[in-house]
Length: 387
Image (tube, rainbow, N blue to C red; front, side, top):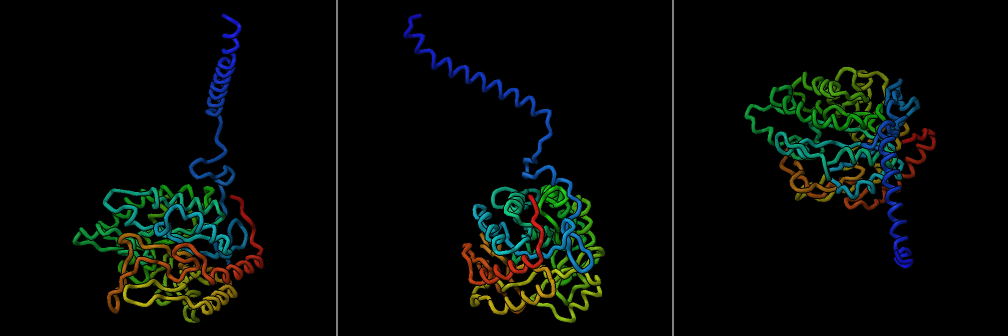
């Protein structure tokens, strides 16, 4: 071979040897990795040392503890299904920056199972990705899986196809309803189990149903829902949420009772104490405002009243949840209606007087409460948790 030809082949031979080396190295790495246990749970990016945490959210006397440390829940509600997925991280980062330590979100059955046996858990309904994002920005999560969630949704988040059964009795132990709930929970809960605190995830509690004390058609129903969750290996702290006048009706044995109201009255406090002693008080739904209805003036939050209420609750060491921290949008026909003294359908915007506007912009109230919560967290000296 001429000298010039040999020189021209050198670059080719060098590249060929590099390719062979890389292929060989990749083969060795692949072979070795088959015998190694992974350090990271790739499904949820959870370090292995977090997978077997035991001491989750607990009730100890009049306080909550998390990981064995005193913990005051400062939560805000954001619904993943009302916010485009590409904005999830932005909204949750703003929640964390606002001084909040916990995200509360509800799971709408009607969106996840729009037709019998047809389940959707991708895209904007990827609740697992939403919870994982909350974990990544440093928020704990309290989940409300229903089956009924309210949340000003059509039929409270129950799928309309349930009504095909002319004998259907919603939110009861009616056989047809229970059968549908069991199938739905089989698909939903199995996806959520790896995200529980004891498995290294951010979920520290779950709410059983939603304000059943106001409905209360079947005394066996709430124990059934509790058992349905526990049967599927839900191991985090369970809660119920009801307004003051029906606290006793919605309660379940060995489940923490929480409140849905704007402020607490002496009568409510007395009733709550009679039900569960001096357990910590959680304002599970502190209603910042109300939804807007068609034909009715836009609701504006009273910042001074909000500040007064929240300072009073924090002074009394209440844990609390802002409903809503960020409302988002009622897409399509998901919005419900109020039908008490007239028919008032919910408008497309679900801004709800929240601390973030529908488009994610800050409100003046956001900055005010950011300063309040930072001062509270600084006073409590809450520990920083690794993720």
